[in-house]
Length: 120
Length: 256
Image 1 (cartoon, rainbow over the protein chains, first blue to last red):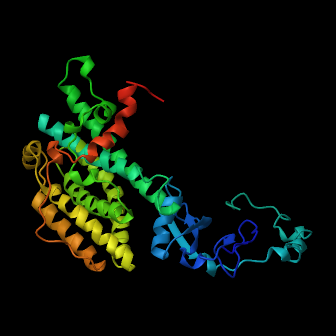
Image 2 (spheres, rainbow over the protein chains, first blue to last red; image 1 turned 120 degrees about the vertical axis):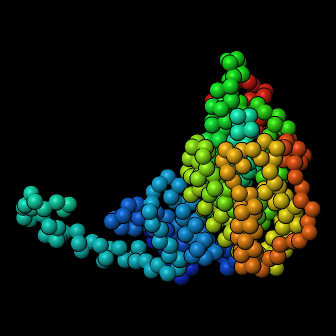
């Protein structure tokens, strides 16, 4: 048995394998991993809720229905095979996100909203 | 009235016993996702059983004056004996492998789908309401189990082999689904008209359709086992009831 372990940050998916944190030698016979997105209400957007294994898209949708919508969480399900998700590299976090930290003027807080404008 | 009570108990027992069988997979499913799927179905069925038992208890209590003989959903599920159970033989058959479990589910859910479809338009308001509410659940059970029958039947050599074995083991119990028990005949001809011949035709059509897609064939000329609906069960029901009823029998009225 040749186990290769890898630490992933939450929400980051290794691009080359796309099947979780442990890649074992018999990974080829396992069902692929799918990322699940659920829309909780009409008009809202789909939100990532987790991942699961399934043999194909059809089974992934049914599994998602059983695993993630048992308590009335959703009205619509999207599934995407995890290997098709490309993630940013946590090692580059500094150059990616830190430059935005001292640029408060990018937030729309420097003017007054009229009362008539809702949902801002 | 007695016939209607027995018919309601029959509907409840079918759902409870299959729900119990499915619940035996809890923690043992082939993969986590399917473990959750089969236990969801189990809970759906036990929920249906509760609704039917509650209605049966209400009907029984209308005819009972002795407060000691008051029925509840619990007394009906936990304190009736083997011969009083009116479930068909199919639902009490052991789980076997995954192929047998999903085939049993497919046969039964497909039957339930067409039966509830008729019951929801029947004259008995309570049964119609339970059937209507349950139909959305059953629709999903049919979809889920059909997918699996196709997946395994049209899958690898081994999965197809297991599906064929499951058909050999279960086909003999499918005839009873459409038989009419003594207490049932008056109920389904007068009180709640149910066209069993139509249900049978629809069931056979659906099974043929899914089997075709799964590259499976239905056996012909198999002798059909019957008796469950009249209380004559296979040896398996006794073990189910021992599991299910032990606590209430050993510690009457215990609660937690």
